Image (tube, rainbow, N blue to C red):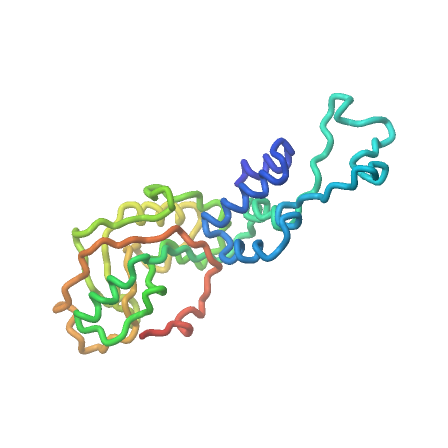
Length: 254
Protein backbone atom coordinates (compact mmCIF):
# COMPACT_ATOMS: atom_id res chain seq x y z
CA UNK A 1 0.00 0.00 0.00
CA UNK A 2 2.94 2.36 0.50
CA UNK A 3 3.69 2.02 -3.21
CA UNK A 4 0.08 2.90 -4.04
CA UNK A 5 0.22 5.93 -1.77
CA UNK A 6 3.38 7.10 -3.54
CA UNK A 7 1.75 6.68 -6.95
CA UNK A 8 -1.28 8.67 -5.83
CA UNK A 9 0.95 11.49 -4.64
CA UNK A 10 3.02 11.48 -7.82
CA UNK A 11 0.07 12.00 -10.14
CA UNK A 12 1.80 9.83 -12.77
CA UNK A 13 -1.19 7.49 -13.15
CA UNK A 14 -4.43 8.99 -14.53
CA UNK A 15 -7.14 9.42 -11.91
CA UNK A 16 -9.64 7.01 -13.42
CA UNK A 17 -7.07 4.25 -13.96
CA UNK A 18 -5.77 4.61 -10.40
CA UNK A 19 -9.29 4.62 -8.97
CA UNK A 20 -10.25 1.45 -10.84
CA UNK A 21 -7.04 -0.34 -9.83
CA UNK A 22 -7.28 0.58 -6.14
CA UNK A 23 -10.97 -0.31 -5.91
CA UNK A 24 -10.31 -3.68 -7.56
CA UNK A 25 -7.45 -4.35 -5.12
CA UNK A 26 -9.61 -3.50 -2.10
CA UNK A 27 -12.41 -5.77 -3.32
CA UNK A 28 -10.12 -8.70 -4.20
CA UNK A 29 -8.33 -8.55 -0.84
CA UNK A 30 -11.57 -8.26 1.11
CA UNK A 31 -10.40 -5.12 2.91
CA UNK A 32 -13.83 -3.44 2.79
CA UNK A 33 -16.72 -5.90 2.48
CA UNK A 34 -19.69 -4.27 0.75
CA UNK A 35 -17.60 -1.63 -1.01
CA UNK A 36 -18.38 -2.93 -4.51
CA UNK A 37 -22.12 -2.83 -3.84
CA UNK A 38 -21.92 0.69 -2.42
CA UNK A 39 -19.87 1.97 -5.35
CA UNK A 40 -22.27 0.43 -7.86
CA UNK A 41 -25.01 2.74 -6.58
CA UNK A 42 -23.24 5.98 -7.48
CA UNK A 43 -22.37 7.51 -10.82
CA UNK A 44 -19.05 6.77 -12.51
CA UNK A 45 -18.09 10.43 -12.16
CA UNK A 46 -18.39 10.13 -8.38
CA UNK A 47 -16.95 6.62 -8.22
CA UNK A 48 -13.78 7.42 -10.13
CA UNK A 49 -13.38 11.09 -9.17
CA UNK A 50 -14.00 12.30 -12.71
CA UNK A 51 -14.68 15.93 -13.48
CA UNK A 52 -17.40 16.55 -16.07
CA UNK A 53 -16.15 18.09 -19.30
CA UNK A 54 -17.26 21.70 -19.85
CA UNK A 55 -19.23 22.62 -22.98
CA UNK A 56 -17.05 23.15 -26.04
CA UNK A 57 -18.09 26.83 -26.36
CA UNK A 58 -17.54 27.64 -22.71
CA UNK A 59 -13.77 27.26 -22.33
CA UNK A 60 -13.54 30.56 -20.48
CA UNK A 61 -15.36 28.99 -17.54
CA UNK A 62 -13.04 25.97 -17.33
CA UNK A 63 -10.93 26.37 -14.16
CA UNK A 64 -8.26 24.11 -15.63
CA UNK A 65 -7.76 26.59 -18.49
CA UNK A 66 -6.83 29.42 -16.11
CA UNK A 67 -3.08 29.97 -15.91
CA UNK A 68 -2.02 31.20 -12.46
CA UNK A 69 -0.09 34.43 -12.09
CA UNK A 70 3.54 33.76 -12.88
CA UNK A 71 2.73 31.20 -15.57
CA UNK A 72 2.01 27.48 -15.70
CA UNK A 73 4.34 25.67 -13.23
CA UNK A 74 4.47 22.63 -15.53
CA UNK A 75 5.70 24.74 -18.44
CA UNK A 76 8.48 26.13 -16.25
CA UNK A 77 9.94 22.68 -15.73
CA UNK A 78 7.99 21.90 -12.55
CA UNK A 79 4.97 19.65 -11.97
CA UNK A 80 1.49 20.89 -11.34
CA UNK A 81 -0.10 19.45 -8.20
CA UNK A 82 -2.34 16.45 -8.95
CA UNK A 83 -6.05 17.06 -8.36
CA UNK A 84 -7.56 15.99 -5.07
CA UNK A 85 -9.17 12.55 -5.22
CA UNK A 86 -12.59 11.58 -4.00
CA UNK A 87 -12.97 9.84 -0.65
CA UNK A 88 -13.76 6.55 -2.38
CA UNK A 89 -10.34 6.67 -4.00
CA UNK A 90 -8.55 7.51 -0.76
CA UNK A 91 -9.01 4.02 0.66
CA UNK A 92 -5.40 3.18 -0.16
CA UNK A 93 -4.23 6.10 1.98
CA UNK A 94 -6.55 4.98 4.79
CA UNK A 95 -5.08 1.50 4.84
CA UNK A 96 -1.54 2.79 4.53
CA UNK A 97 -2.11 4.97 7.60
CA UNK A 98 -4.43 2.59 9.49
CA UNK A 99 -4.51 3.19 13.22
CA UNK A 100 -3.49 0.29 15.49
CA UNK A 101 -6.49 -1.67 16.72
CA UNK A 102 -7.29 -5.11 18.17
CA UNK A 103 -7.41 -7.31 15.10
CA UNK A 104 -9.11 -10.50 13.96
CA UNK A 105 -8.05 -12.31 10.80
CA UNK A 106 -9.90 -15.35 9.47
CA UNK A 107 -10.40 -17.45 6.36
CA UNK A 108 -13.89 -18.74 5.60
CA UNK A 109 -14.25 -22.45 4.86
CA UNK A 110 -15.56 -22.62 1.31
CA UNK A 111 -16.65 -26.26 1.45
CA UNK A 112 -18.45 -25.99 4.76
CA UNK A 113 -21.31 -28.22 3.63
CA UNK A 114 -18.84 -31.12 3.45
CA UNK A 115 -17.98 -30.59 7.11
CA UNK A 116 -21.64 -30.30 8.11
CA UNK A 117 -22.47 -33.56 6.33
CA UNK A 118 -19.56 -35.33 8.02
CA UNK A 119 -20.50 -33.95 11.46
CA UNK A 120 -24.11 -35.10 11.20
CA UNK A 121 -22.99 -38.61 10.24
CA UNK A 122 -20.68 -38.67 13.26
CA UNK A 123 -23.50 -37.87 15.66
CA UNK A 124 -23.34 -34.09 16.10
CA UNK A 125 -26.90 -32.91 16.74
CA UNK A 126 -26.10 -29.27 15.95
CA UNK A 127 -23.28 -27.38 14.27
CA UNK A 128 -22.37 -23.88 13.26
CA UNK A 129 -23.89 -22.86 9.94
CA UNK A 130 -21.77 -23.73 6.91
CA UNK A 131 -21.23 -20.01 6.21
CA UNK A 132 -19.85 -19.51 9.72
CA UNK A 133 -17.18 -22.21 9.53
CA UNK A 134 -13.70 -20.73 9.34
CA UNK A 135 -10.11 -20.94 10.50
CA UNK A 136 -8.76 -18.16 12.70
CA UNK A 137 -5.39 -16.84 11.56
CA UNK A 138 -5.00 -14.15 14.23
CA UNK A 139 -6.96 -13.16 17.34
CA UNK A 140 -5.02 -10.19 18.67
CA UNK A 141 -6.21 -8.27 21.70
CA UNK A 142 -3.05 -6.22 21.33
CA UNK A 143 -3.72 -3.26 18.99
CA UNK A 144 -1.76 -3.62 15.76
CA UNK A 145 -1.46 -1.74 12.50
CA UNK A 146 -3.20 -3.99 9.91
CA UNK A 147 -0.86 -2.75 7.20
CA UNK A 148 2.15 -4.13 9.09
CA UNK A 149 0.74 -7.64 8.89
CA UNK A 150 2.03 -8.00 5.35
CA UNK A 151 0.66 -10.57 2.93
CA UNK A 152 0.18 -14.32 3.11
CA UNK A 153 2.23 -16.81 1.13
CA UNK A 154 1.07 -20.15 -0.18
CA UNK A 155 -2.17 -18.80 -1.63
CA UNK A 156 -3.49 -19.49 -5.10
CA UNK A 157 -4.24 -16.68 -7.55
CA UNK A 158 -7.61 -16.08 -5.86
CA UNK A 159 -6.10 -15.79 -2.39
CA UNK A 160 -7.39 -19.20 -1.33
CA UNK A 161 -5.57 -21.85 0.69
CA UNK A 162 -6.22 -25.57 0.24
CA UNK A 163 -5.45 -28.22 2.84
CA UNK A 164 -5.13 -31.43 0.88
CA UNK A 165 -6.99 -34.58 1.95
CA UNK A 166 -5.45 -36.90 4.51
CA UNK A 167 -2.75 -36.28 7.04
CA UNK A 168 -3.18 -36.08 10.81
CA UNK A 169 -6.57 -34.81 11.98
CA UNK A 170 -8.22 -34.79 15.41
CA UNK A 171 -11.56 -33.84 16.96
CA UNK A 172 -11.10 -32.33 20.42
CA UNK A 173 -12.58 -29.91 22.91
CA UNK A 174 -10.92 -26.51 22.95
CA UNK A 175 -11.43 -23.83 25.55
CA UNK A 176 -14.62 -23.86 27.59
CA UNK A 177 -17.07 -25.64 25.28
CA UNK A 178 -15.87 -25.61 21.68
CA UNK A 179 -15.42 -28.85 19.76
CA UNK A 180 -13.03 -28.41 16.88
CA UNK A 181 -11.42 -30.21 13.98
CA UNK A 182 -7.65 -29.84 14.32
CA UNK A 183 -5.39 -30.10 11.28
CA UNK A 184 -1.78 -29.18 10.48
CA UNK A 185 -0.88 -26.42 8.03
CA UNK A 186 2.60 -25.00 7.64
CA UNK A 187 1.19 -22.05 5.65
CA UNK A 188 -1.31 -21.04 8.34
CA UNK A 189 1.11 -21.60 11.21
CA UNK A 190 3.82 -19.57 9.49
CA UNK A 191 1.38 -16.79 8.68
CA UNK A 192 0.21 -16.66 12.30
CA UNK A 193 3.79 -16.57 13.55
CA UNK A 194 4.66 -13.74 11.17
CA UNK A 195 1.68 -11.71 12.41
CA UNK A 196 2.64 -12.21 16.05
CA UNK A 197 6.21 -11.20 15.26
CA UNK A 198 4.80 -8.07 13.59
CA UNK A 199 3.11 -7.06 16.85
CA UNK A 200 0.01 -9.23 17.18
CA UNK A 201 -0.86 -11.17 20.33
CA UNK A 202 -2.20 -14.67 20.97
CA UNK A 203 -4.15 -15.90 24.00
CA UNK A 204 -2.63 -19.39 24.03
CA UNK A 205 0.86 -20.82 24.31
CA UNK A 206 0.61 -22.37 20.86
CA UNK A 207 -1.37 -21.85 17.68
CA UNK A 208 -3.18 -24.88 16.25
CA UNK A 209 -5.15 -24.39 13.03
CA UNK A 210 -8.69 -25.64 13.55
CA UNK A 211 -12.30 -25.31 12.45
CA UNK A 212 -14.86 -25.02 15.25
CA UNK A 213 -17.72 -27.45 14.65
CA UNK A 214 -20.01 -26.73 17.59
CA UNK A 215 -20.29 -25.09 21.00
CA UNK A 216 -23.23 -27.26 22.07
CA UNK A 217 -21.80 -30.77 22.20
CA UNK A 218 -22.97 -32.69 25.29
CA UNK A 219 -20.20 -33.27 27.81
CA UNK A 220 -20.87 -37.01 27.77
CA UNK A 221 -20.31 -37.35 24.01
CA UNK A 222 -17.30 -39.61 23.43
CA UNK A 223 -15.15 -37.66 21.00
CA UNK A 224 -12.62 -40.49 20.80
CA UNK A 225 -15.25 -42.43 18.85
CA UNK A 226 -15.61 -39.66 16.27
CA UNK A 227 -13.72 -40.31 13.05
CA UNK A 228 -12.10 -37.01 11.97
CA UNK A 229 -12.98 -35.45 8.64
CA UNK A 230 -10.18 -36.37 6.23
CA UNK A 231 -11.30 -34.57 3.08
CA UNK A 232 -9.85 -31.41 1.58
CA UNK A 233 -10.36 -28.12 3.40
CA UNK A 234 -10.82 -25.18 1.04
CA UNK A 235 -10.31 -21.78 2.68
CA UNK A 236 -11.05 -18.41 1.11
CA UNK A 237 -8.96 -15.21 1.24
CA UNK A 238 -7.90 -13.59 4.49
CA UNK A 239 -10.52 -11.30 6.02
CA UNK A 240 -9.28 -8.52 8.31
CA UNK A 241 -11.81 -7.30 10.89
CA UNK A 242 -11.83 -5.32 14.14
CA UNK A 243 -11.72 -7.77 17.03
CA UNK A 244 -15.20 -8.42 18.44
CA UNK A 245 -14.88 -9.47 22.08
CA UNK A 246 -18.62 -10.14 22.23
CA UNK A 247 -18.60 -12.68 19.39
CA UNK A 248 -19.74 -15.67 21.49
CA UNK A 249 -23.11 -14.08 22.23
CA UNK A 250 -23.81 -13.88 18.50
CA UNK A 251 -23.07 -17.53 17.70
CA UNK A 252 -26.02 -19.62 16.50
CA UNK A 253 -26.22 -23.27 15.53
CA UNK A 254 -28.50 -25.34 13.37
